[in-house]
Length: 269
Ligand SMILES: [Zn+2]
Image (cartoon, rainbow, N blue to C red; front, side, top):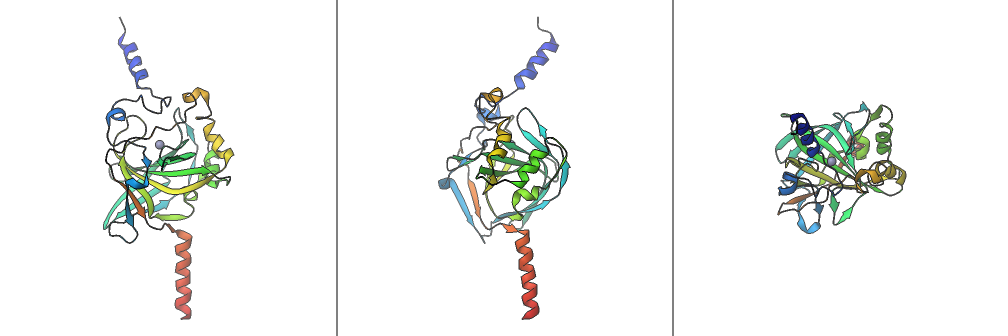
């Protein structure tokens, strides 16, 4: 006879999951959901919203610096805290969210036109009112030989408490007007279909040493998932609409300099 204690233990084991098959063996919603993430974003599936449109969506980004220590879990590397508050403007509607942290997947989970990228960062945001996960903002990095200052601070946080300025990841952008948006799920079990996904198409710098720092834990680690990275395979669209908001991102320094120019012009004219 198996003791209840042992059954409980076996139950715990049954809940364990890994990336050996890219998530193809995960159960529940992961297996039968129709609005799953990540996805491959093909141009022919896009509904393009042009700049100036009444239904233009934009995200105002409000950053704060935090001193944190990174945490390597059995599935990813994450930094926890409220690094970012977001106001989503959709027509006359506004919603607010705050970050509970961010983590990394390598190679990327989302793909664009069949192309996979070297690293993807997920900033996980909760709704300000009920604290439920609501938005995930995805950033894509590719190796182009340029060192990414923000990623260096993230790597430093693995060994010692480090000041993290999430604004450095966004190159001074404080309002996103150019992004993909669709309804999807968590990309890890239980794959709950609760996520408003925002993917920034701008490819961010990375050098090969920085990429190796992440892949040594996952894709280059034979012990991890038979050489598979910590990325779930892309999922069927099942008729979902992917919006592409085709606006121009606003950089704080740029809007400030415009403001100064306007002041100077106003003074002299
Ligand atoms: Zn993720």
